[in-house]
Image (cartoon, rainbow, N blue to C red):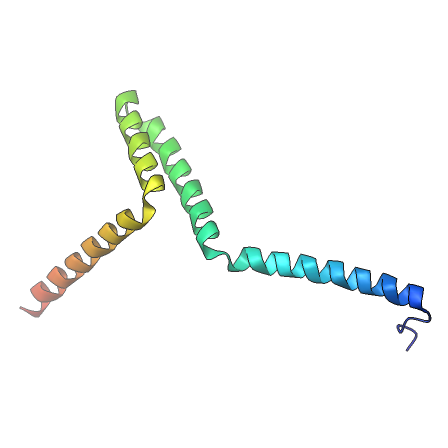
Length: 101
C-alpha cells in the first residue's frame, strides 16, 4: 500500500493529477454526449461527400444548384428532416395499404 501519499506535498500533487484526469474524462464524456454537435458534424461531412460526388458527375450549373440546396439543408436541418420523415411515413402507409388490399 505504498500508493498513499507520505506527506502533504505528495497529497497535493496527487490531488492535482487526479483533478486533471477527471477534467479530461469529463471533457471527453461531454463531447460524446453532445449529440447535437455530433449530428451536425456528421451531416456536414456527408453533405460535403455528396456534393463532391455530384460535382464530378453533373454539369457545373446543376452542381451549383445542388450546392445551394445543401446550404439550405445546413441552414434548416430540422424542417428538412421532418419533411423527409413525413414523406417516408406516407410512403410506408401507402405500401402497407396496397399490400393489405
